[in-house]
Amino acid sequence: MNSAKKRTVLRIVVILYTLFIFSNSAATGETSGGFSARIAAMIIDFFHLPFAFEPFHFFLRKAAHFSEYALLGILVCSESRYEKSSTVVPWLYGICTAVLDESLQLLVPGRSGSPADVLIDSAGFLCGFALMSLLLHSLVKAPKDPPVS
Image 1 (cartoon, helix red, strand yellow):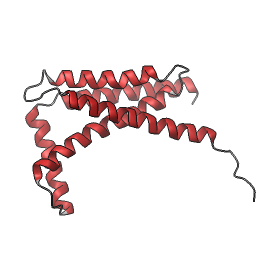
Image 2 (cartoon, one colour):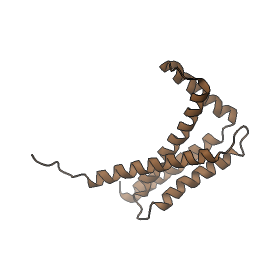
Image 3 (spheres, helix red, strand yellow):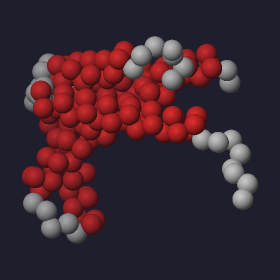
């Protein structure tokens, strides 16, 4: 597959994943909270963790924010490597997506947009983007043939 086709496929994946993020935010507070509460309970029970439920549930929800956006950062970095522009535009995409995502939650019953969540989302995006950038950079710089001893 040539570079233009790869870029197009990755761009479609980025758009679909962004829509997936927005669809998660469109769930009511009761639906979203109930889903994450079931996951938290399953993790605590399965691993026999000595954690109080509420603090662990809170941590799990914030970790999900970070992870969701870290994957977005990885996808955007993968797509943007086919562009010859700076990293500012892809980073702005991630940060603006986080702001829009939290703003959309203001319209959903039982949900609230949180500036702290925008920061967590943005940090996740930037970490995913940076890690993928480092990985791609190391792959490009890696020697094609191992040194002969």
